[in-house]
Length: 310
Image 1 (tube, rainbow, N blue to C red):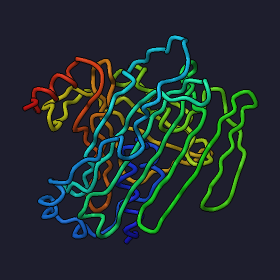
Image 2 (image 1 turned 180 degrees about the horizontal axis):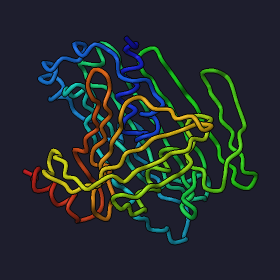
Image 3 (image 1 turned 90 degrees about the vertical axis):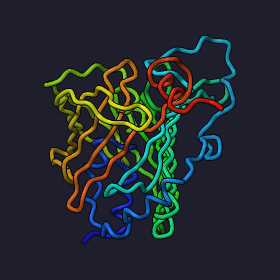
């Protein structure tokens, strides 16, 4: 039986890291009774925090007169997810994009925040914040900050990328350690990679091989585009998706804990609509619940129809 810490880290990592971290983190192994279905009566009333309350939002426009590039997603987009464990809601996660700056240099910020609900926090509180700063011209990361607070477990790490020297510097404030490791021209951290892949068109029956940085290592990530399916989403109903199955390996050795599947919407946004990891005592799911921000497409219109203003 694995520790509760490993179980919760597995649950909250499912959205952020997609296939890779689900593959390298331990399999779910805590007693499902710790998060009983009865807890739904409490967690169903839990309120999702707004990004501004968590430091995710950036109200500073880039100090530049240059035209900012457009991407395959709208900057200002907010993605809200329910994190489910053994059919119980155990937390929520939010991913936002915003313009920011370092000096006069405009950068794209992608920030991920996950937090356990009241029921789970009484046993094992989780409050994770991860931010990637991205060069908008190349869509490669400049800086990657990770701050995980999970029970008594704490990680606070920063990775700086230098593509001229093809090196990255990883530092850990908790361990008081630093390491320099080689990178390639297309090396990206997991958050940047997740958004970069939204620009790609997957076709059922095809494979994709990429290299991704996690912690201070470079992993080979293999993604199988399996088949078209529909998934049921709160506020949106049935959504057409492509099912993807990722696996990861480090130095030629596959690292995997159970089967991982993710469903990507079949529209121009290419959103991760749902992610599911099978584990010995059940499954962990991240389910897209709300899309907010600029735009007037299906995601925005449907949410407004489901939740009309008074």
